[in-house]
Image 1: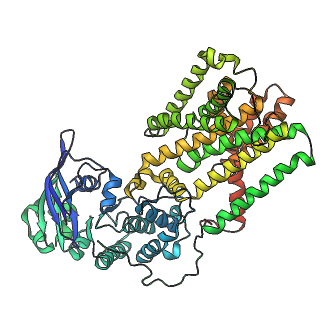
Image 2: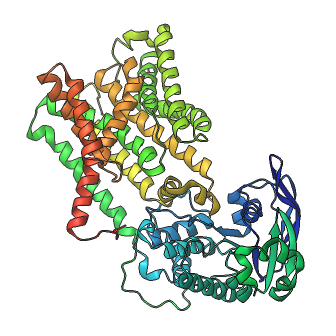
Image 3: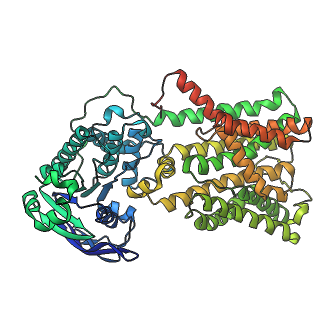
Length: 252
Length: 342
């Protein structure tokens, strides 16, 4: 269970995250939406330790993550993927997975043995299978397609066996068809792995179709939380976000 | 807690998997062969000049290869790595002159001293981002160089550490014997390279590669980036210091130039010449630079111009070091573009 309590962060005078409190039940799938600048990415950065909150608590099964550095938060079980695929360009897919498992097993500093370690193989293999990257194991990350790089980024989070997986726009920069394939993959992973997944998404069709629960952020605050139907009918949401010209088509 | 169940649904794949074990034996075998060949050289050629050349290669090679652990593997561009070369030379020379301890003791004590200095300097430097890291390491180099110059009573100032380094024989090795010095230098080189190769190919070596490629992402998979950087900074310093020790033994003294920034510059130069994407690139670069130095200085007094043109050729013409070029050429011939053998 991930509980956010009164989380706040300001940049200068701008409140990027303003007293946000939210619960994410174990095994839930939640979409976070909101207009540009709503503080979605800041929200993720706070939870994962990339930014330090000004106030508030981030409780993972009762343990407060606020103020901890990213490596420690990752070890507690909060993994993330990035809006722009964050990978290791010169490593192959397989090396990336093996090295990540190494790090997770606290063996990133081992010097007296050769890479890769036998005990990292099974998990690396399994993660590559899950994301459909096994056939591209010997490709360096830099040579992968955009979509595969996003998958590798997710694999990198997933291979650590997180309790909570945060995906910052898994479909960013993709064509329509590719988006659906990616989001099906996300849903499939969520169902198979039974982990808590929270993702940021801009495409309303996708959000309303696959997310059982939606959180709407606006100016750093929670505007609404609920099922797709409830969000669709929420007046505040329609006015603040969905009602704007850009997205009028999506509400219909 | 979710478990990624192992082996579930995995079918045998015909794609080659990375295998670790044979690599290590292969490296040890190559090292042994290299050592035997080097050890046989004096009995085949008997030219003192050649042996001197190899000893200098050992000193600079250890230094340049250790710099590559920072530059090529971790992405830490240090412009002050030469300070550890100088520290090794002076530390060892002073220890032998002032205390008269056996050589192995002085060797270990010098490395211990280097370790302490490197931990302190590293702890300050590795937090800094690229350009700041480069300049602050350079600043420390200048600090150490100035200290050596001004602490005349201990270091001999700009005259250097003179009067020779005493070399009491140990374990029937007599380093005042040229052949013994040669074999010992070769042994130190081969062992040093083998150790660095082990580091580069270990899980820690891959941690370094991840930090080089994307330090932010590395921290988000649970890697303590600062600690890893400090560790490799200190380890590289130890190998550079060993190079300095060999140099001190070779010239039987230590000179302020050993700790001057130009040594660091030569290290970078060597890495550019040889290439930073292969482990042996810096070794090849060392041999190239020393040959260039020796031949060009014999032919013309304007050797700076010639070396400058050479580095321009590599930097602008090839855009990579010689070994990078060779490896890529072979890879292209085998049609492996985009795919890479581990």
